[in-house]
Amino acid sequence: MTRWISTALLLLSAGCKYGPEDIPALREEAEAHEAMGDEQGAWAIEGIITGLERKYGAPQATVAAPQETEVLSESPGARIIVQGEYVGDAPTVVKWDQHGIVGMQFVRDILVEALPVNEGQWRQQTVFSPYDRIPRRMFFDTRLRPAEPPH
Image 1 (cartoon, rainbow, N blue to C red):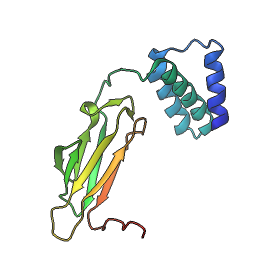
Image 2 (image 1 turned 30 degrees about the vertical axis):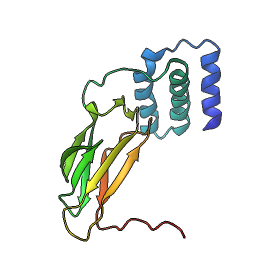
Image 3 (image 1 turned 45 degrees about the vertical axis):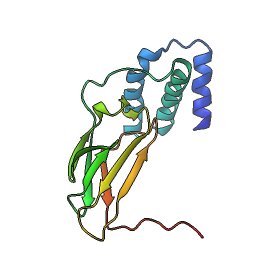
């Protein structure tokens, strides 16, 4: 992958005519390559996107339709919290349009929590970092005990 990113950055520095307005179309192209099983092509395009974002900063484009993630839990009914805001009881759908996304990626840290509804269950959480892809589905198992720190 590093070779493809290096090649993409070389293209950008050699005067390739891409600009920040091209990022959404390039993301679609990368996803199309990935869907066809062409990982190298997708990596090369992702390298161009990375170079553009480094050169121009993350784009401030808006998303035409809200991106959504289905959130499931075992046991059902866990309270789902995104960035401290209650969004529903699992199973539910999180709409990311108000939580800091551009295209199909997060642009800032996003904390998602599942709060158990039954005694003897445990709070679960995950943090998405900038440029993590938005998942189609998330699953929390509130029956799992938190890991013990090493001694």
